[in-house]
Amino acid sequence: MVVLSDNSVDHALLLLASMHVGRPVCTISSAYCRLTKDFSKIHGMLDALEPGLVYASDARVYAPAVRAWGGRAPVVFGIGADDHPGAVPFSALLETAETSQVLDVYHRVRPDDHAKYLLTSGSTGLPKAVINTHRMLTANQQQIAQVWPFLNRHRLTLLEWLPWSHTFGGNHNFNMVLAHGGTLYVDEGRPATGLIDKTVRNLREVKPNFHFNVPRGFDMLLPYLEQDETFARDFFERLEGLFYAGAALPQSLWERLEGVARRVRDRPVWFTSAWGATETSPALTSVYWTIERAGCIGGPLPGVELKFVPNAGKLELRARGPNVFTGYRNSPELTAKAFDDEGYYLIGDAGKLVDPERPERGVAFDGRVAEDFKLMSGTWVSVGTLRVRAVTALTPLAADVVVTGHDREEVGLLIFPSLAARDMPLARALVAAHGRDRAARAKFSGERRPGGAVGVRLRRGKIDVAGENRHGV
Image 1 (spheres, rainbow, N blue to C red):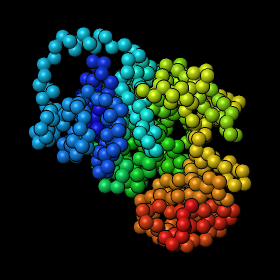
Image 2 (image 1 turned 60 degrees about the vertical axis):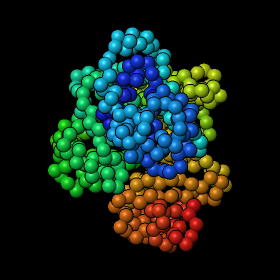
Image 3 (image 1 turned 180 degrees about the vertical axis):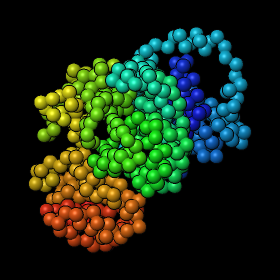
Image 4 (image 1 turned 135 degrees about the vertical axis):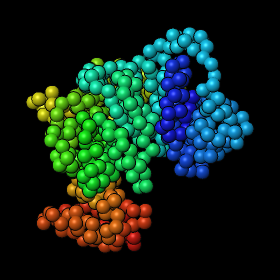
């Protein structure tokens, strides 16, 4: 079964029902249908997945993509099915009486059967379909529970926007509530202009006891937390932990969140994180102790083996364990390339011990091995490290940066201004960000570029900004 739409109660019911009877399910990002009129990618995915059923929440949004596909699979819509001949309304599925066959099929499901497919790395072609087995998903929740024993004592209350097409929301968080009990509220908001207000409203009402988010999500929430003490008190009132993953958290965001928490509660908030991938269902490591700053991705979960391999001046991380996948669907060549000769998964990330003398203090993330590059001088640029430092230095004016400069003379940054910088001329914004450093000398030309991004060249002692009439780097 394939689901084309965003998180919803109907989506969850179909997902669980499908896995219950041993039918793998794949949730595809709704953007492939909602944000484009070119449906070639979604059609390619559907052809590759060969679904027995396709579900989408609203025919008004998803019917054009499904209708243009022309596949033979039955189509189910949450609403609007009556306007599309041949489509089945979701309500009709709820009226179907369960027979003894359901239990019979359920008892035939085995640990290594495919539970779901998650799509990954489709920026330059069709995404790969990562096989997630029942063993992988259940093993990972048991691994997490062994280092987070509070999950067995306290029921989670979560408010979730993280898409179930991604392993963070769809495996880590959804399955955590499923494994230990609790309540998961679906958030129709998300960290985007015009939608973050919905998340703030929902957080006021739900008051979750654990909050999972990506760094961008925390960045979007912070202005509301800093400017509205009532909201900050509502948010932190029942909160036991803040969990960040999906990208490195700039230390500046950590410190701002910590500052808000200190103003509205007596006890400190616990910051925690983990590291993994779609292919590892997803967690390989976890932070299950108190850490003082961002950067630590924790220690290996029970049953996970990490191997450090020297690579281009870094230590490449490789992993194996019961939660690591066995391959990509119908892609034996890609599968063979994903593992080394000892069966360790080649995840492509780099890491190092936080303290080489005390390995129990965990592993620090050290960027992607594949993303690092050399300048013309032969100097290696650690992209992941530089990105986090740049965002921190430009706080609160940069939402994110992209590091460039492969085979060039200098490093470049493509800066995406934050909400705080949106109404500021670029020159004043960068002066404000760098004015604290008296040693820095800056030359500016031009204002904001179309599309909101800013091109910057970094040289010793100065910053050159690419404006509308100059080429960015």
